[in-house]
View 1 (cartoon, helix red, strand yellow):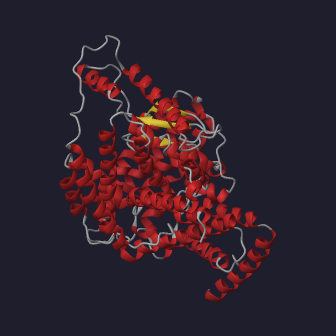
View 2 (cartoon, helix red, strand yellow):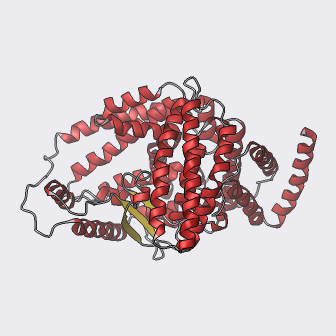
Amino acid sequence: MKIIRIIGIFVLAGVLTFAMAADFDVMADEILEEIWDFHPIAATHLGRHEHDARMPDYSAKALQARCERLEQWYDAWCTIDTIGMPPERRVDYILLKASLYDEIYDIREGRVYEKNPLVYVQACVYGVYTILTRHASDPDQKAAAVIARLNQLPYFLKCAMENLKRPAVILCEVGVDQLNEGERFIEDVFGHFSDSLSPERVLEFQRAKTIAVAAMMQFGYWLQKNGDPDAVYALGREGYDLKLHNVHLLDIDADSLLRVGEYYLRATGAMIDSLTALLKPPLRQMVVLPPDFGPAQVVEYREEELRDVRDFVAASGVLTIPAWVGDIKIVETPSFLVGLVPGVAIMPPGAFDKLRTSYFYTPRLPVVFDRNDAEYYYNYIHNRWFRESAVHEAYPGHHLQKSIANNHPSAVRKSFGDYFLVEGWALYCEELMVLIGYYEDTVAAMINALEGVRYRAARVVVDVKLQTRSFTYEDALRFMVDNFGGSEGYYSREVKRYISNPIQPSSYLIGKLQLQSLLEEYRSMKGSEFRLRDFHDELLSHGSIPIKLIRRLMIGG
């Protein structure tokens, strides 16, 4: 078997070397297709709709075959001579290498398909969710794809139960909660579609829904019975560092990351205390409300706020909003998404979708306001409490950044979404908008921005300590409550999210700090020719890729 694999590597290496010489882009596309074929749900998210009707095949046999294939690609890819390769192409090369490494690590070393039930749980929900949030298909096409994926859930979850060995009880508990939400989600999806489909399609959907929900219930019961209280769910220090270095291309380890988080947690707390002494009491008015005040006024206000922030950014001169950037449609979070999106969120178009509109999900409003609702939402409008969300999610945050990234000509860049750039940019924008005068009360706005940094610093501490096994779930929960107060139930959901998505919680603050460091290097390099607009425009032009690679393109070295 080993000899066959070695021969296969040499054969593939020869093919790759020839193909690289002929057409690097064709070879890159073949690797992307390999990854999309492995993860059809991720492909749907990107707008590659040829994969919409498939669930992943994570059976043990398929995983073994896939891993061997990915290892062949990786070994051959590493033999490619990058000397003299143009910088833009070399970035694509590094990104594909990182992607292949990540996939192989998760199968071989991380053993996520054996240890983490959330891989399977989340696929049940996101397999449907990604189809509903893509814009290229009409309702009947979407329903057909949803039905196809629902029909595959029994086999998919059978493979999950065969693959999983001693799953950690905390992951099983999270999984059971998500499966319960997922069952309701699928019921709501059926209700959403049932009025717009033919009777034959409705019956087909009903059957698929019943099959899928039964399989999810069975898997939930299995998780309740098989959760292991002694099993380890964390990446571990070595795994955490390997992911930082080889996937996100960070020159920092877990210990250094922890020190950064702890420092900013203390420092921002001290700054907030100092500024709070200068802050006027918050304005909350008790007023005689207009008789027609209701949900329509809240919707109108949110739309005005989006126009205002876009206009302000465009007029400020701090960056360019290209004319082709799509619109944002504010919609109340559909009932079938409430369990997945409890607050506000932006859903940008897929990188390969033709439509450019983003959907801005906001919590559902009461149909009719009672006195408490009316008072809250009057102050919500009067004090412009939606502005911070508009900055982070829309302009100049996620919508603008993702829209520009989606326009990059490289399919590799379109396919990559590095946490540290994406979340770091949105957090960077929160402070940027304070500094360029977007808010009337600068002191209050700066306090809000610092509170955002402080909270993200706490996420770094919790993320690192959970994944290096310095914190248990209970330790992390107590840490968040002690530092921020409030509902233990809220932080319970937060900590479980950190457990299920390691490294992502650290990306906000660390990404922002990377961007600020890059800004200072760029400023020094440009000297008297420095323009903040030029920095932001060039930064965003390179896609959602690790900031280290953007630095190479902008600074060199």
